[in-house]
Amino acid sequence: MTHHGNTAHTDSSLVTISERAFGTTKSGQKVSEYILSNRGGISVSILTWGGVVRSIVVPDTQGMSADVVLGFDSLEPYEERHPYFGTITGRYANRIANGSFTLDGITYALAKNNGPNHLHGGIYGFDRVVWKAETSSVPNSATLTLSYVSADGEEGYPGEVSTRVTYTLSSDNSLAVEYTATSTKATPINLTNHSYFNLAGHNSGNVLGHSLTIDADRYVPVDETSIPLGPLAPLNNTPFDFRTPQAIGARISQVGIGYDHTYVLSTAPRSLHRAAQASDPVSGRYLEVLTTEPGVQLYTGNYLDGSVKGKGGATYLKHAGFCLETQHFPDSPNQPTYPTTILRPGETYHSKTVMKFGATTPTK
Image (cartoon, helix red, strand yellow):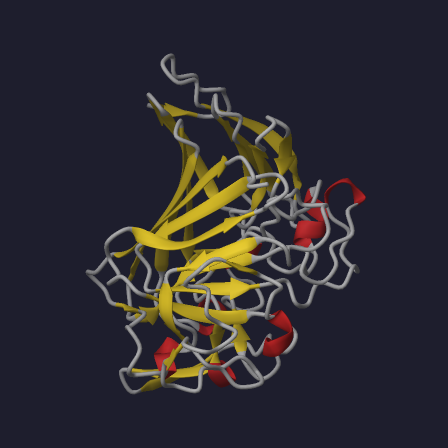
């Protein structure tokens, strides 16, 4: 069943979804915020602007709740340039070298909005548009479905692309994000959510003490502009190895300004498999990420410098949050050995990521 603007209640589990106005864009479009809440104390807020996950409230081992994602209190800073806090990134998450790719003999020029390269879909990517919203609920879960039609030629990409992103909060404290897309012409597509997590609370300083495990045995080495060098590299004896739980900050000084690398997940893509798990030893909160994608980008907020004021006036400094962006590999349109990111007419792009939240008693 579909609800518009009203709270939907499910009798058995009371996973609820409600809507409130969140402001008006500079161009006059109204933006809504949808709040999905369950009985386990998990509450997720999502904007129609950029599909932004604005907050995720999670209780700790003592039942104390905190908002564990970085973001803003109002629409205005989201409309300004910001570090993609919580956004849907597309058409192409991550970088495309030199803002250019050749497909079926035609070369396409894209914006160079990250040094010499194209990043996260360009100047006005999926993070900077108002998405159409629908809500629905069944026992044990509530769903927000966002849809957007990207015009042929938008940001230089070929094909009219129709995209749907569904966010489903369940009574088991999981947030599933499912992406589908179709296109009228062959086009690259690579979608992800760009939430910055701090499981101690968004305003709790850096995440260097968080424990992290990534189920990968290889990673994508990159040049100084974060473009892949090509061959995938083993993690053995490198500071990139998170196959066993490691503090995020334990070896971060060995990788320059911090992690901003794609991990090649060990399990074959297409089936939902665990990609990573992170936990905060103080609050006991944890996040487990499962995905159908072949890779996950670990980013440790290396460029946060305190210039952006967050929720409640919080100052987000370097390493104030970490991202686990499930996706295909960067620059795949220019890397023939990587899994393809080309969507062709008649095909449907499909990707699913599940984030499970909880808290365990910290070990003494």
